[in-house]
Amino acid sequence: MKDFGVGIRKIGFLVLSILAGLFLWQMFTTFSQIPSFIFPKPIEVWDRLIIVLQDGSLMKHALITLQEVLFGLMLGLSAAIITGYFLAKSRIVERVLSPYIVASQSIPIVAIAPLLVIWLGPGIFSKILTSALIVFFPVLVNTVVGLKSVPRELYDLMRSLQANTWQRIIKLEIPAAMPVFLGGLRIGATLSVIGAVVGEFVGADKGLGFLVNVGRGLYDTALVFVAVFTIVLLSLGLYGSVIFIENRLLSWQKRNGD
Amino acid sequence: MKTKYMLWILVVIFTAVSCSIQPANDGPTGELTHIRLPMGYIPNVQYAPFYAAVEKGFFEEYGIELEFDYSYETDGVALVGANELQFSLVSGEQVPIARAQGLPIVYVMAWYEKYPVALVSKTEQNVKTPQDLAGKRVALPGPFGANYVGLRALLGEVGLQESDIIMESVGFNQVEVLATDTTEVIVGYSANEPIQLKAQGYDLDLILVSDYLDLVSNGIITNEKTLAEDPELVERFVSAALKGIQFAVENPEEAFQFCFKYIEGLEDADQDVQFEVLQASMELYQTDPYGYSHPEAWENMQGVLLQMGLMKKEIDLEEAYTNEFSQ
Image 1 (tube, each protein chain N blue to C red):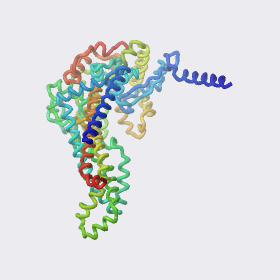
Image 2: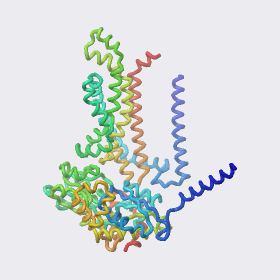
Image 3: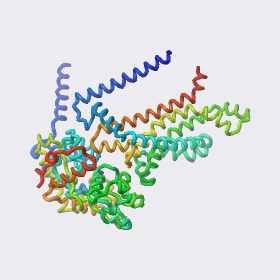
Image 4: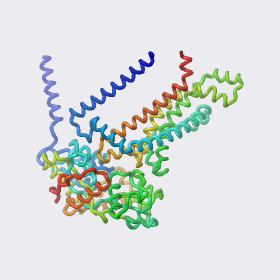
């Protein structure tokens, strides 16, 4: 009952905060008399949202971006987990790969994205790869840190119990590294949307990044806002999903804490 | 004593602030008017008339200090529409699209006479006429901007639909995707992509949109406020720009030399190719008279944009452009 009350209060504050934000936005655009093509009023954005919802175009583009993001996330996660495991386990692999991995992070994704279009063609795969590339590093770093933070005594314990490699991975390393890994996944999930949208900016005829381009090309700033808010919503949805997974997977930690 | 010092400090601050907010300008006799001009593309030899006009002192002669800005075309249009800037160089289709969205911009000088978009393919593709495009993969930066409008206008002119071709959005990578056969046809500027590809040794076929339809092309825009309150500034700007065009047309080699100061890395680029780009651009510059845009080209453009759905309603074209400043 107490939890229910806290939940209601939280939602109440969120609604109030959003309403206050909308009110300030409306006041600012009304009194500053900024033209709509520079900064539209909330009501104009709302009207535009209704139009693109009714004609189905927002859903169509959002689903394309979501598809790219999910595939990108899967690809980036898989690559980061596998590479991270070997980096954490082998000093030689770490020494050989680290310079490349660190150097790759200084390459701006916007510089690489046009090249991916040339190498992989204008289809969905170049966007998936852009998304995967941006997801890779934070997940990799957290995988390595998570695996390296497993206490040595626990390895000794597993050895004394004569656990085989799989048992060691499943029973010890994955649960022990999970909290840090999920921290990386939170960042990766949010970044994956940015990656896909950057890919769409460079060369696409569908997706939310493309919708932003269309809005800009037509001086339809309300449409740009609608697309941007949808991108934000998508990021928040993914972030929330990771939190949900985190709560489910780490409930044992919470129970132990209690 | 303390009050005296404070007074002096206030006087110094006031003087400094007054100097910094003094409006730069007032024409040929006063200080120079500072104008920032969005060009809509990266530094390029096609802008040689503007570079020449600055270097030859034409803008200064008309009391203007010109600064080049290579931001996006749509940003330039929005800034002029909001009266943050007075002028911008844009492609023709932007004017009706922007005015339909309520941007009070006015086209005051034609820079190109012909719509510069072309469809380019390797000769083995056998794309000689627009009808040959049916079923072909056609790459362009995306379904927006001059390339897209040019493509759709051309398809419409010969009774084809967008669904009759396979359209591919490749960003500004048209040269690379045609060279690597990732696509079959590209849409680009006739004075740019085809010349770069020919220089790499490819035999090409070109279909010029302007051979099929007269569409209003690239030019200078201002906003209604500037036009109403300071028409003399518009006249000075257009006069200087037109003088630059005339100079570049009459002295292409000298105009090309001015480009080196503005285009980083030009000295390392293939000079012959770059000069060819300039010469191809020259053919587009030569409006008759200089700066003039044809009313039927505006009508055609509006028709195409309405048909494409890029404009929802007709606009009054009389308010969208003026030939008052052409020479």
